[in-house]
Each structure stands twice: as structure tokens, then as C-alpha cells.
Image (tube, rainbow, N blue to C red; front, side):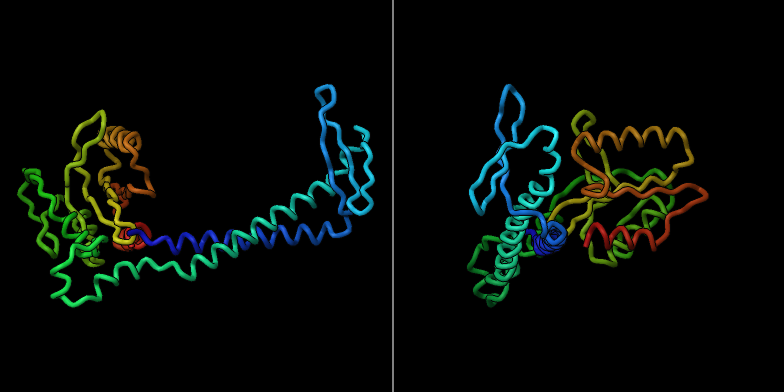
Length: 265
């Protein structure tokens, strides 16, 4: 189960910032009378009626004077939006006090192994989820060159750059599959370089490394491939990671490290 706490906390900060901004605006409008505005339609045009909330007095405002109502309208708006923001802030703060998805996992994980053996948990543990994801079997693509590049965990890859990426994934403990088939509508099966598992969200993220960007035919082919990814719901920065290099600008471990920490942890 995905933990949304960090996203909710970001939302709370955004609400607090908006509330502060609205309160500043209300302070600026403090001298504006607390009048009300009612709008009617007359011959297809808006007609404004100003209401004194203290005396109940009402009067229509001439078209030439309508702009003088801006301060009153803005103050009314700021009061309403501030009230809504405050309610959301308090509600979210109260919710976060009791929101902890880890407790759901702990119900099972804190049990003795003997008891676990008797139970089919409602929510898969991380280990169960990874085991199920890793259990998918597929045929490897053939290697036609003689070079043999193997990761620390014994996975064979096709290039030195892929070796750096794979070893870094293994170093961080990121579950991944090399060249796992992926069906794309309109294309059929493709073989992304890496299919990675983001354990925080329990979602699969595709990683494509484009290693010959100074080769025109290679670039044209892979621009088409990227378009197919997008047409099938894979977007860079969401569920698709892309890295690039040329013969003069090769990928480094610092960049790969940053990608993993940003997208997969």
C-alpha cells in the first residue's frame, strides 16, 4: 500500500502558504467597509447592488462606479477562501495525526513466524510483493557479441554504461529486470533496458538508456520509440527514466545515482 504522507505534508504546506497570503491580503483590505454585493441581470447586463451589512441599506451602483466595488468584492472573497483554507488545514492536520500506513503492515509483520504461517495477509509485505514481481519468467534476448559484461549479481548486460546503471541499482537494492518484454499498443513487444520497481509506490518504472546519440539513424529510431512510450502512458519523470550519452559525453555514476535517488527511492 502506497504511503501518501509526504504528498499530504506537501499539500499542507501549500495550504498554509495560501492561507498566509490570503491573510496578508485581508490585512491590506482592513479599511475596506464590510459591505455586501448582490448582482442582478437587467436587459442581459449585470446590475450591482451595494448592501450595508450594518444598517441593511441597499443602493444600486452606476455602471461608471462599478470598479469602486473591487475592494469590497476582494475582501468578501478573501474571507471565504481563508475560511475554506483554514478548514482544510485543520482537517488535514487532524487526519495526519492518525495516518500511518506502516501500522497496517505491522499487524502481520510483528507476528511470530509460526502465526504468520497460518495467515494469508490482506496486504502483501514488501518481501512478498518483490518476490511476486521477481517471479515473472521471460526469455532473455540472445547476445551476438563476444564481450561478456556481468553485474555484481551476475546479470549479463550489453554495454559498459548499462553495467554502471545495473550495478548502481543493485547497490541501492532496487529490484529490476533486464530487457523484460513490455507490450506497447501499435508496436507489440519492446525490450526496455531496465524495468525497475519503486518500493515506496510499488510501481514499475521503465529505464531506457540511449547510448549512441551522435548516430543519426539510432536517434531517429529511438525518437519514434519514445513517442510510442508516451502514446502508451509512459512519461518521462513519472514512470519512464531516460538517460543519454554520445561518444564525447558519456554517462557518469553521479548522474545515475541522482536518477535512482530521485525516481526510485
